[in-house]
Amino acid sequence: MAKSTTAFTCTACGASHKKWAGRCDACGAWNTIVEEAPLSQGPGRGLGAHKGRAVPLSSLQTTEAPPPRHLAGMDELDRVLGGGLVPGSAVLVGGDPGIGKSTLLLQGAAAFARRGLQAVYISGEEASAQVRMRAQRLGLADAPVRLGSETNLRDILTTLDNERPDLAIIDSVQTLWSDQVEAAPGSVAQVRAAAHELVTFAKRKGVAIFLVGHVTKEGQIAGPRVVEHMVDTVIYFEGERGHQFRILRSVKNRFGPADEIGVFEMTGSGLAEVANPSALFLSERGQPVPGSAVFAGIEGTRPVLTEVQALVAPSTLASPRRTVVGLDSGRVSTILAVLEARCGIPFAGLDVFLNVAGGMRVNEPAADLAIAGALLSAREDSALPPDAVLFGEISLSGALRPVAQAENRLKEAQKLGFSQAILPDSQKVEGAGGMGTRRIADLTGFVGEVFGAG
Image (cartoon, rainbow, N blue to C red; front, side):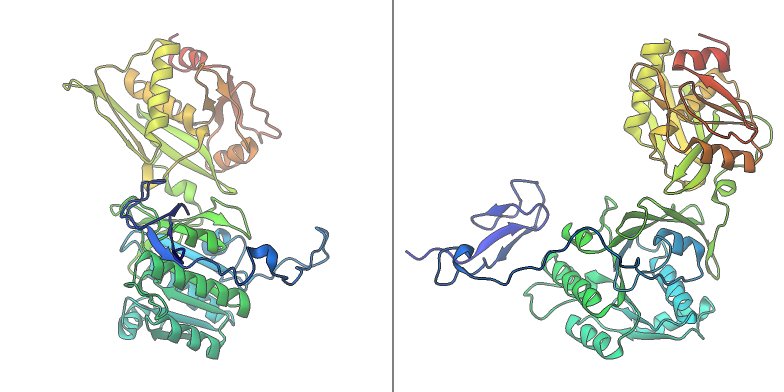
């Protein structure tokens, strides 16, 4: 009997299957198994029977100059890209519907075009007239950006090959379809094929390409995970619907630091850059308020001060509520357990609400001390010093551990008028710049020194 010439592969994890199934047994993903033709082995047995071309090898030493950069003049966008746009790079931009991805990229295309780059904007979701209306509303009607509306991948590649632009924006990759793939637009196979062809074209022709990607309800970019591996940079455009502020966050960048952020404010005339995000994420510093702690954090390469707000109230429920916004809920549960086990401060029977002001999201372990300070301040109804910032990681033993880039944190705090910092005793600080420091060894000492209890 002839051996089967097809294979079934999961596009999410790469596992092989003997036949098609709706759910991958390896990773549990649904509708990710596709049929693929295996590599042809020809008359010989395996790849060892073929004589291929030897790949030229070189040493790690190089005299090549770093890749050139093109600046848009939008400092927040240039920072997230790693210092400017690299020719031939592929950038994937994701975000919730209506968050402002198309507005951001249209403003970015106009900024690059006004600096001499030839920019092409291809929309697969809107007609050209709709994009022109947005450009007029943003005051970009006079920008030298070439505009098109198409979803056929073959036609888009032919257009880009004829125009040879410096920058191409594809909005969005989920709307594209290739006549070489027998699947509906937006399917796993179509998205993977379209992304592969566009990234290959970018590398071969030296055209920088931005791909807009839809996100799932979990917040991840829709489609196969391999698309994020193909591109050079992955950027998420984040924001809360109730806030006018938007955060452009880099989670992968081959040409710059990852986890860099840029902050924008959504206005009637488009996205405006926020030069000082620390002042943005701090509420008015008036009278001291219980349950408020200022955290000196680091986002990418820039220090950002944020306010952690807590509310602790008696609960009438059998299981008290734990509502956390902008922080890792698992981390908060750990800090609550350490406070009870190491400091003897129970939160049983109490509802706990935690929030980061301004819609910011904080994932740093260095925020542990600020979270604990806000919780204790709310529980004891005692305000922290209004001129103090906090940072430090809490271990399961209750000890405070040092964090990185303490000097940058203190400089940013001093610039905004804070005069003291509460930090771990083992934290090394060179050049505090006149900031007073209160060093504490463990969480028990923090409770005793700051709140007068132990």
